Each structure stands twice: as structure tokens, then as C-alpha cells.
Image (tube, rainbow, N blue to C red; front, side, top):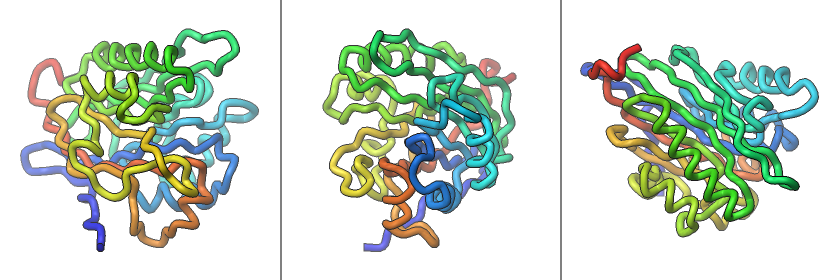
Length: 257
């Protein structure tokens, strides 16, 4: 079966925008960075929600190299958000950014959120990249913190991309999907399972949206131009989640800068 391509990025006559977003755990770029860059470029995203970005020695240079290799720019995050990173195309205008560190549980990795508010054409959008804990109780607390952060951004429309470290039937995933719209569940496109890349059996990565953002398709991309399964397996240990979203024009006073 031939997979129908997702809509390209565009601005509609009514001021709304079709935005392509990608969520991707890149395992600190420890695998094949050239394959990683090829996959991201082939997805042609406006926004990339990265998890496990480089966090240690010269991490800013590593993030800058990834951005340059994918024709994007660094928006927010990295080590200052404990791993989540945001990249964007020049289509996005940055209104504000904030990196959020979450409470640390002794013996476990520190977690955080990379957040920003951007404008694309006639739209205004809050974006959050997250990577939740492996431990169920901490993961559930972080899921609550994520929803609180989205609410506190004060925007009419928002998108979350992340490695939730939970399956759709899990407590944390269900909590988030009870308040936000799970892209794959609403409009499945491409593949479902995201981990591990060399034989995916679980869907632990997702793109989710607030009310009013139309999901045109969401899933693991297949049939990308110039990209085969070998690149997807070599790039990192997760598969990417690509979504096309239609974001309404910022028509209300509360949605203007």
C-alpha cells in the first residue's frame, strides 16, 4: 500500500497555517548523525521536538551542528532543559522561550521541558518538548506538571512532542491524552510503534495538541524521499513521529502578542 504524503507546510487564505512537526528521541547523537540529519531533512518539519539532545561537553556546538545539518535553527532547550530541545525552520518567529527543570528524584536522571511560543504566518502556537521518567510514580507526577505547564503558557493553541516512556494504556499517557489530543489516535498515518527502532513493538513517543488544532495525520513516517529503513534504524534507537497540523489564525485578543 502506498502511503499518502502528509500535507506540505503552507499558509491558508483565512490566515491559518499547516505546520509540520516532528518528535524524535536522538539518543544524544551517539548513533549515526549523518543518517539522523537525513531523516530529519526528509521529514521537512517546521518544528522539531527533540529528546535526549546532547547535555554535556560542548553540547551547544552539537545542537548547532544538528540544526545546521538539517537546515533548521536552535529554538530552546538542550542541557538547560535536561535533554529536551526545540528546533525550528525560518518560517517560525520566536516570541519567547523558557527551559523548565523538574524536581529531581535521587538516583534518577534530571528531567525538564523545553518550551517556546512561536508565530507562524497568522498563527500563534505554544510548543513543549518533553521526556518523561522511566519510573511510574515520577512519570505520573511529570505528566501532571506537563499539563500544568501547557495551561500556564497562556496561548490558545499548543503542541506537545515527547518520549513519554509510557504506552497509551499507561497511567501517565492516559492522563495526558485525557486533556490533550493524541495525534495517532485521532488521525493515524504511517506506522504506529516507535521503539525500539530495529524492531518497534511499543508506541511511547507522541505528538499531542490542545483543542482547536486540527490533526491532519500523525505517525512514524514511511516512504520518505531518499530515506530507507536502514537510515531509520541507524539514526537512533527510536523512530520519529511526524504530524501535519492545521493551526487556526490568532483571532482572539488573548492570542495576540
